Image 1: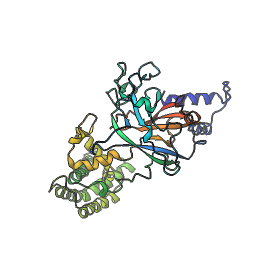
Image 2 (image 1 turned 90 degrees about the vertical axis):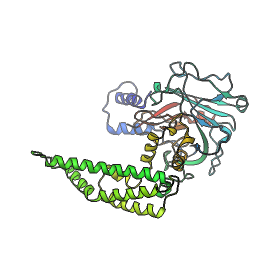
Image 3 (image 1 turned 120 degrees about the vertical axis):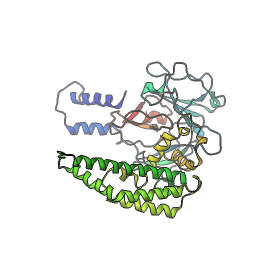
Image 4 (image 1 turned 180 degrees about the vertical axis):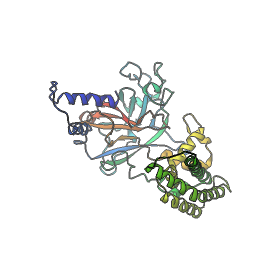
Length: 422
């Protein structure tokens, strides 16, 4: 059941009275806030927990054995009993983790709670979840399983995915210490941010040209909007209201008219220079630094309009452009056919911190109502187009298990949580 439905349930229970007998009493905002915070379960949860980042492998590296992966199909003995959901239909397969690959966390030397030193962990999710532990002797005779005939497309569960499986991707689990400061979403200390500065990721002529065109298009669109806005102001009988929004637009479009053409010209010259040679050639860092100074000077004068978020360099927008224009990137595409000029950027994005994690700390959910007291997170998977785990108004999913049962190697009796974004 979704977080919002659960939230309404406990809100109604709280409204009826905490004694559970329906006694009426006035419900205050403080009551609701206190109960909501308590349900997150953070009060008795450790503020430092070992975690294993589930890093996606680069599709461009030399092939090597795969023992852990997300999506696709599990490997198990032929007689494996595929788990069913609450409605009796087979659960979609989410992850298979090689337990021998889970090295101890370097600082605490801790291993995953309750898991054996070898074998495999299999995770399935749908409306509910199921975890299965396969021993090493089971894995010795494991084969890729066929999908159950009654397994339905993932769209049944609200994912933007017409397939019956999540996208298959080999992973490498890497141990690190997750802290309450990091709160699960933050980048692990062992993984540097390769998109912190434009010089870190605008490295080839092809990426430089693509990124420059995105900024040029945004600036030209603002100039066009400005012309339309001025035309509406000059229209006979026009009387725009005198408010903060209109005054902001007047300032913004005047700035665009005065400054945007010179920035567009600088970006055009930079783009042409980047493409003068081969698209795979490295960019001139001195020239990149110069054009960035021109861009940032305009950014610093702007109010919060779209170009302000592109002028400093926006790798998310570049990734989005590649995703839509390069079918090689999408599920089923031949990623090795991606143009070489884009590969350094794409490899950095794929192998970067994508918020897929085993154990560790999950940030409190601002829009969920599940009662997670006494439970810890077993696995957390973000909404990721590479895996097909995206869904409307959600930013991820996770499996939670009672802490005492988890320590004994029991991963049932917990909850499957869909992370509500709104």
